[in-house]
Length: 553
Image (tube, helix red, strand yellow):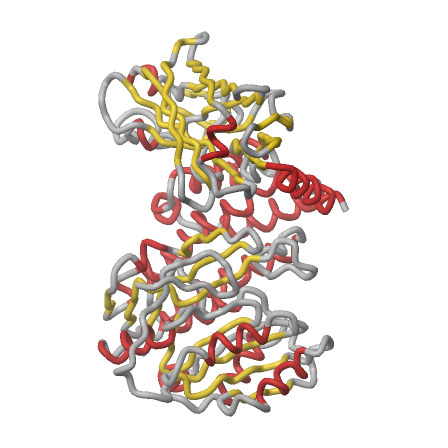
C-alpha cells in the first residue's frame, strides 16, 4: 500500500483505490461551524475520493467567520459540491448531519467533520466492502493525528486488523466500542428505512446515540483494515473539540447522559449483549479517561463529578463490573463505596495505561483491599485462586532521571504487590527508551537489588549525545521510558511504563560536538509517566522555550 501524506503530515496506511467500482454511489456529508481555516481541506479530501463520490454535501451551521463564503467559492468551481446554509446555529453536530442526510441523493453516505480529512481511497475501500458483502454498514480504521506534532494513534485497532464481515452485531459485541460515525459508510435506505438519525439540537456525544441506533437495527457490518479517516486532534485550538473540552462538569454530564441513552436504545431493541458491552466500554474507556484527569480539577468539579458518576454506577450489576478490566472495576467499586472524593492521585495512576497500583497495599482477612477503611473494595485477581499472572499485575515502578554534562542517570524503584513479585524472584530490568512517533528504540539492562522490605532498585547510565543521534536529524525528540521486569522463576517479562518521581526532573543544557548544544528535559506526562525531551541545537532549544512561554500565556 502507498502512504498518505496530506499537507506534509506523518504517513499512515491508506485505503487502496478501486477503479472497478461503480461510479457516483456515495454522498459525503461535511459539517462545519466557524471553521473557515480548515473546511476547504476537508471538502477537497472528499472530492479527491474519485468517481465513487457522486456529491459532497457541505452543511454550514450558521457560521459567523466566513465558512459559508469559503464553501460557496468552492462550489462555484466544483460541480459535485452542494452547500446547505443553516440560518440558526444548532448548537451541536446532530442537526447539521441530519440536514445533510435529508439533502443527500446517493445510495450510500459518509460523514466528515470540517477539521478532519479522508485519506486517499477511503470511500472506495468502504464501498467495495459494502457491495461485496451486501452490508448496509462498512467500517474502517480511524487514525487520531495530533497536530502539529504529527503523532498518529489508531482508534480501536483490534477491530480493524483484518477484513471481516459480521452478520449480526449482537453476536460480535466488539463492534460497540467504536462509537464513531465518521469512519463508516452507511446505506442511505438502511438509515431512512429504520428511522435512524442523530439527536437534534445541542446534544453532545451524539455519536453514541447514533451508533446505538445503527447497531440496534441489526445490520450486517463489513470491516476493512484500511485507514479511512484522519481525525485531527488540535490541543491548542482556540475552541477545543468536544473530545478535548473536558474541564467543565457539563461535559461529563453530557457524556453520561448519551451513554445512558445508548444503553436504553439497545435494551429496547432486545440487544442485551450489546447493552452490556456498552456499559463495560463505559467503565474501561470513559470512566478511566476522566478519572486520570481528576487530580488536575478543582474541588467543586470533583464533588460534582463524584456525585454524577456514583449515580450512574449505582445502576450497574455485578456481571458488568466483572466483565470490565480489573483497574476499571476497582475504580468503580471505590467510587460506590466512598461518599466523597478521595485517593485521587492513586485512582488516577490506576486509571493510567498501563495501570499502576500505588502503595499502601492493605489486607483485610487475608484479602487485598483498596484501604482498611474500605474493606468491601476487594482487589480481586491479585492473589489467591484465579490470580493474574505476574506479567499482568499493575506493578508500580518509580523513576528519577538526572541529566549531567556527559550522561544521564536513571534510578528505578520497583514496588512489590502483595508478595507476588517476591514469589516470582525479580532479577533484572530492561529499560527501553522509545522515540515517540516510532522509528527508534534504545535498550539498557541492569540488575535489580533489594532496597528494604518489598522494594527493589536499579541504576543505569546512558549518553544523551548518542541518544540524540538516534532521533530524527536536528528536530526535537521525545523519548518515552518503558521497562521490562525479568523474574527468576520464569514466565514472560512484565512490561510497563515508569512513574516520574523525585527531584531529578530538571532541564539541562549540554555541549554537543555535533549540534553545538543539547537541551535535555525529563518530565512527567499527563498520566505521570516519565519521558525525556531532547532538543538538538539552538533552534530546538529555542522551540522548547517558546512552547513553554505559550503554555504560560
